[in-house]
View (cartoon, rainbow, N blue to C red):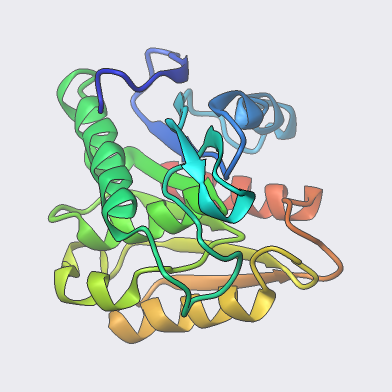
Length: 226
């Protein structure tokens, strides 16, 4: 799957990297504005390599089997108790793991200078991946995230990133991934041992990232990299 996976890459010959996964129906391009926003704020001085992977196009059950970019199939929106695409989910975690390894092995970036993250489906995969890694990385950003595979994930949890900073942000009026589902997800990861997970709520924000949230994310990135 790795070899066939394309990504938007912005290589700045940097010593740090951000790998960010888009949400359902989007592509890596959808988040490729992030480096420009980070640059405009002038908060982060350090150059960063950016990787915005494109999810494979798969049939999405909740959308009547319509084929679109997705990290895993969805049977019902926002229902933690619905049927879940467990195999597809963990396959995407493996893809993210291999992208992390690539930054370490090919670009010689130290693991603690790598931040992973994502939006919605991408956030779900990023949170799960940081809990599966057997080595410590810099941090994780989960925007409008959730955990669809808690029973399957729990026995696989590794303690390597229990102290790693995790930023979780969620809009209070999200119609796709309910705010409550996001909040419960943060409590779940904390109960598993993730001590430095902070949950941020954004009033009146739907299934998207607000300007305020993006500024908070950039401050989070700055704290890790500098």
